[in-house]
Length: 131
Image: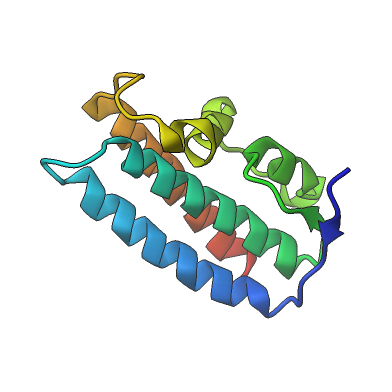
């Protein structure tokens, strides 16, 4: 069983600042002409994860240390529900198994844009809650 942690509410704002930097990194990687395409998805996953955790911190909800986005989304109270796309948890693989694979799965521009947009939408949602 994974131990759950609770952080100070103020930590939410620090996490949002980090997530914002990760979002900018994701945007820059999206425009790169070389390098690992998987890095776009990894950074997008990090933005989503930090955004979700910032909301949990802000709402003072305990959560386990995990890369699994579905687990984090499941901790969000219903009145603050995250209405992100159902396929958002696919990004989880880029923080785990796909982080250590290159080129096994073909990624096209549409996949990369979708990853960036998922990150951006999640970050904006978190920012509204933690205002």
